[in-house]
Amino acid sequence: MSEPEAGRRAALGDEPGMELGVGIGWRAELDLSIERMPGVDFLEVVAENIKPAHLPESLRLLRARGLPVIPHGVSLGIGGAEPPSPARLAHLAACAEALDSPLVSEHLAFVRGGGLEAGHLLPVPRTRESLRAITENVRQAQDALPVPLALENVAAIFGWPDDELTEAQFLAELVERTGVGLLIDVANLYTNQFNLGLSAVDALDALPLEHLAYVHVAGGYEHHGIWHDTHTTSAPQAVLDLLSELCARATPPGVLLEWDDDYPSDAALESELSRIRAAMSLAREAG
Image 1 (cartoon, one colour):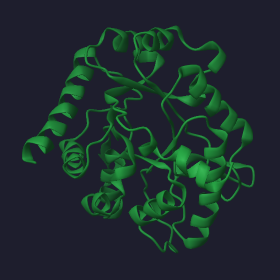
Image 2 (image 1 turned 30 degrees about the horizontal axis):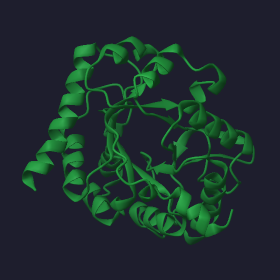
Image 3 (image 1 turned 120 degrees about the vertical axis):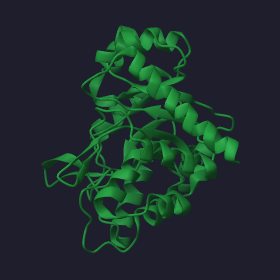
Image 4 (image 1 turned 90 degrees about the vertical axis):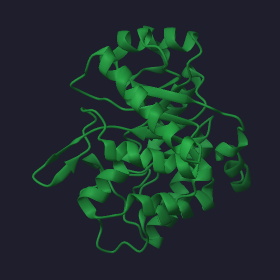
């Protein structure tokens, strides 16, 4: 596939009117809760946790109800110096096809090098050299996937000393070169502001939000002066305030709640979705 063709296929703007709504990350521990919960418009599932040929019954049921399901990868390592694994890309593609997904999302993260696994979603070095390598990795991923790709900003507890670009500048240039979509995690922006002093509002001002695919919201906690993005608590008001700030700048196609452990009651999850809708409405009312 030629570069212009890849860019056209990758650009989420090629699918006008795609509206996801308010969703939640599907987890096996939440399957019954999600099935009976009103007001869930779409789902995201960790791609590494499913087998495309043997989808969980709950996901099949929810797909039959018409809910879009987005495969969300955590191990592709598109931010490394090595090309993305063909096997991992094939798995993401198979997930998208099995779920009839509108797009696939992954993290702009460094996860492995020289055969060693980092065990975390680490920030990429934001240098021109790194940008060239990651641009090529993104293009390879786009060529291998049957649907558009969106990349997520990650939470960090450190920055690389030789960074030449801010995260927003790096993402903006990557979008310009590849047409890749953006999955903006406002909880991660808050984490980077808390831990590294990086202004989340400044990042929103610099990001090309016209390429926004959808948004993540999640909770965490502070411990010894470090914010930990654990996805195990209610989202702090500061994260929802950032969602309102984002919605004042752009209309996100979808906003999704992540919750990964210490699972709460159905009522608590419904309350979180209501808080998300309220934060989105606040921006619309202010506008």
